[in-house]
Image 1 (spheres, rainbow, N blue to C red):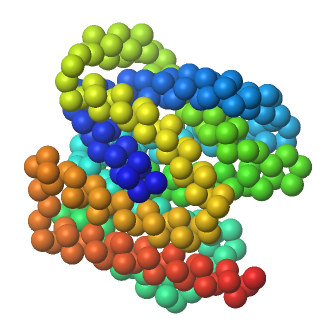
Image 2: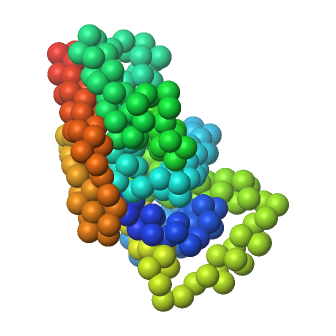
Length: 289
């Protein structure tokens, strides 16, 4: 899961050096749509796609949030580095805690200290002296992390719906499908030109390879992430994902993406804060159980 998700960020960075944010989103989601239809046909799961009673509005919302987290992440990769993106997108742990507070699960003292620590780390990773002076691309990464967190709550509600709990295949399919729909609506006035320009840039080059690989990896994220959530505790899955920025930093350094000492310290602080938050949530749930 760490390698798949980290590689998705890396390949997106390469794809966006040539292709627009809109074309990248439409290409990836269209590729995944046909791949999922093919896999659904082979595995005889296609019939599940019609069992939407009680969950359809939330599936649309999942797709809308999927579009929001995608386009903000793509804009982040367009204007910032993959290394910083991999770190800043892990602040989804922080946003999950904030959202939980709005839902009535108030954070403890350790949670609040961890969040303050993470915000300090974010400022260091961004290279700014203050959380209020973030770079343009880094703001998009933080917005994407917020949408990732919000989407996780909606996905869980569909998985655990009392009347019609949806399978991972159904959630992933409609997540991808409605994300594609919203990408198309977003670029409706210029959709044909966006697609035509994107296709005209196809060729044997790093950006095209990145685009195709990102499409395959997006599908694999659905497979490995949802599967891990089914068989492992959420806290373990979240903790495992903290290794992803380290993987991305190592790989991107081989491609010449520089990270200074202050940013490395920020990486450690963000990941440490996220780890403390994750473990704090785990122990709190254990006590309630």
